[in-house]
Length: 247
Ligand code: SF4
Ligand code: SF4
Image 1 (cartoon, rainbow, N blue to C red):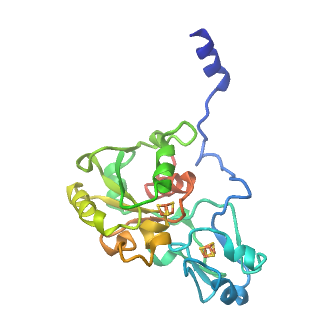
Image 2 (image 1 turned 90 degrees about the vertical axis):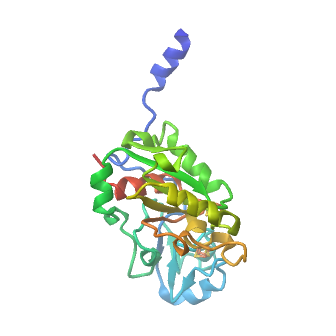
Image 3 (image 1 turned 120 degrees about the horizontal axis):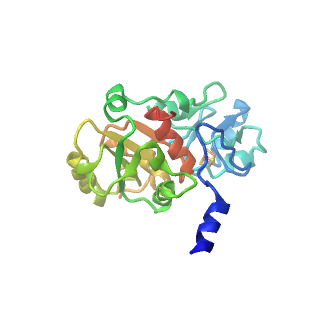
């Protein structure tokens, strides 16, 4: 017992201070892409497995961050930065180009949601056909390093206890009905968060006849969090920025 307490004391606090202190992810992490030279876009588009590149822009809703466009163009078309803050309020804002990037800090939530719920916000997670990687990255938000609960945000078991839904997966036809029922069981006003490329635009399953191909085909989405899967910090920062939980 003494040893356990001593180890705890020695380890100290493991939760990162973000957003009060900046957090630097490793160089190898592929975050917000910085488009360098539009003239290389056409060629890069031919290598994109997601058809996410068009007119020298990248649709981060479709992108799975495979890095193919960066490698094939020797970083001349795009370079992936290690910036993890890249959530948006609208689907259109996920399209980035040489002239237009994402400012996730300006991605504020509906006033009614922020004022009503303040620092007590419950979310129900729905996997609408995800591969379980997005779901795993949501799970780790409860570990000591991220500790999403310190902002008053909890994942709950029932939609009836929830203030919003956090949806992953491309919404398979088999999950459509269950998702709609869960949405209807959540009391208003409610927030809908699409987490990951699948939930935003079908992800790697975008051309399958078995998927709807994005939550916004079915429900009004308030917050889009790109990635395949999104880094836990991308999810955490999106929620913190959206609900203005910085303090
Ligand atoms: S990183 Fe995104 S845009 Fe680039 S090739 Fe992969 S899916 Fe396409
Ligand atoms: S976005 Fe990627 S990681 Fe997330 S459920 Fe889809 S395939 Fe899996």
